[in-house]
Length: 158
Image (cartoon, rainbow, N blue to C red):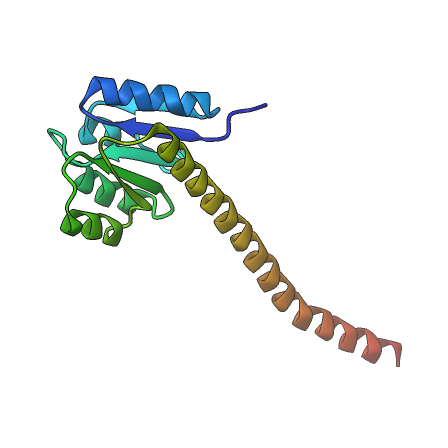
């Protein structure tokens, strides 16, 4: 069975980074880590990661700034923010800026796994919906072409 997806884990605390990386690797995900937002941004390329799990408060570049920059590069990136200093304001701002989810420390590993599975399900459903929309547009655009061809053929046969 192949890898289910690629995840970038960003946290300035080595123990949290290692715990998340181990947990996600057990979920059959390919995991890369970064020590802060700037390190993560240096490693991030559009399409390279399916999901980013990042701490909110870090040196050099915090998670919120990283979220904004990642969304500028790839608006379809799925971003989960983790923080040890939760407030309603930061939760709302994080979601408003484009984060998929907001998790508080200390977190439950099973909860993280569940939320990440849910995020991947959403990504899969979104991709399928785009395919269906593309097919519907192709069908709508092809109908006039077939009508015109039918009229031309009918005219030619008469």
